[in-house]
Image 1: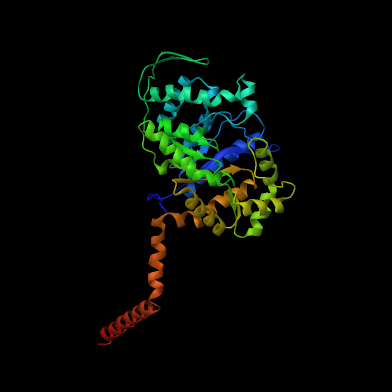
Image 2 (image 1 turned 45 degrees about the vertical axis):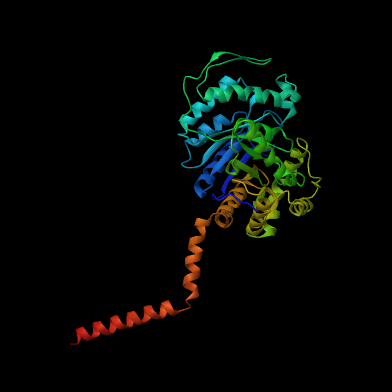
Length: 385
């Protein structure tokens, strides 16, 4: 089995998914605290979504969240996950992204999608069936603008007349396309030389399609003169962990069934019974759709995804109110402490050094004791002549 050699990265893909009965003010505050905590404990990146209906995914402009989060964090990269391109003039999207690239000093990432919520498209007078076509038409313009080109192009929804950016990108930022299970995402990623965000990676059907989807990326990349790199492939793996399985189950009573029942109304679900937290957790763990349990269970899931995919660059948790805010923060901290080190070889050096010392038995302590006794004897001899 072929695996990429670079250390795996870890991030969060956040709709975000909030219970609709909590204060929107608190929801925005908790989103920001979540990002700050991820930065503090060593996660690599976070992706923030754009949605306009449903009452659960309440961020309408990920760029605003990224600008605010950039002022509160030091290291973590911040991505649009994703800008729903068909809802915007592509020239203005390009301008906003370049501005964010400067404001974050290169910590910005650009993620795109055709749109998930049907009502979002309908409210702005769009036919959702056209969104994927519109995404590619816009990317033709946006990427050309990023390269410093002057663009003249007219479609049935925008008109570019010698359009050019007054600022070119600050950095060579990551770009990625959201993919569910259709060929659309991999085709777009390959055509434009982008990475791919596989948000259905643990779906019982989607997990079996991972190799096929990556093959599409590679084929389309080759057609358009790009080289696909598994480092740029991100897989979403929903998880909530605690010190014990029982504690994790108790934590997700807070919002698991409400949030996931909502998500089933947006994308085809996995046939889970949402009437009982216990039943739902059992089914989710059994079919591999999610991990609700312990760090060991999380490590096992990641290894399974490595095998199913053949290797990928970044494992993303999902930002959702399955558990209370405090329990979610703790889950992320526990993940950083007891899961991430197993997939970063540099973190294994302390364990190796520890094992080498323990393998010597007590010989080191005995040598130290002898040296101490010798020093004591030498001191007494000098003192007493």
